[in-house]
Length: 298
Image (cartoon, rainbow, N blue to C red; front, side, top):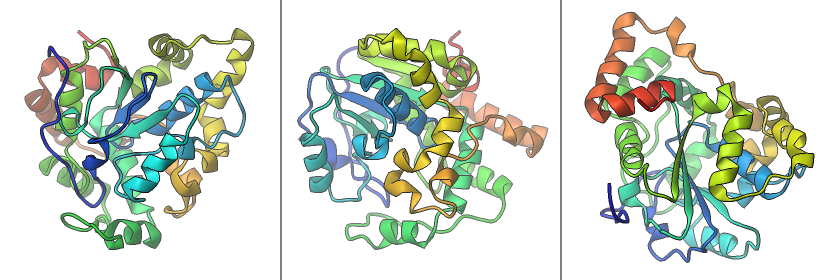
């Protein structure tokens, strides 16, 4: 894809209000973390916070790095908060590229994960959400589209519904992946993969630092790695999770659940696994589908 991507539509739902980006005053050094849900967003936010603040302990990452296109709290609240920030800003979005105002000034990091792993993590996220989560999404004024309902009590059925209705009950998985894959060669876009980050976190963090033009203080390197480890994040989850985990039974530790891949392999049949693989090839093409499954670009 050549040229700067253009916004062609709005996405408004029980979660989204993409209009927040329409008049957003970007700063030249802004960082936008883009993802589908449950693909390693919180992990990348933690990594970037550690790089920017040189391994500092106890950073309130969820407050520092808001999800701007979530429709709650109101746009004016979120915008005022990020405008007041004096550090290098790092915000997150779950939008596909064509619903986002794209700026050539800033750096975009997109992290992806095999969709089957996404479903397993998403089911935990959805099934442990409490009444306060549903109330926030469904009863806050301005709801567009259907409200969120509680999930079915069967993860395999959830998997099939998510595939058959492309991301139901959240948003399209395939278009999210595809739109970011299409702009992977732009100089201010960097695609990373959850699997690669698990396999070689130190190497991937160094690549992220180089892309963001952040010089690593080697005297703090071991501290940075420790603070980006799953065990540390799980033990200090309250600072990393929106509202300290108040929307989930089990709190913030439930939000940062297991961080592992492949749990679906012991549950899905060969036919059910192949269903996903065939859809990925059809929706994304073989090259992108291969990257999504393996983290490797052919």
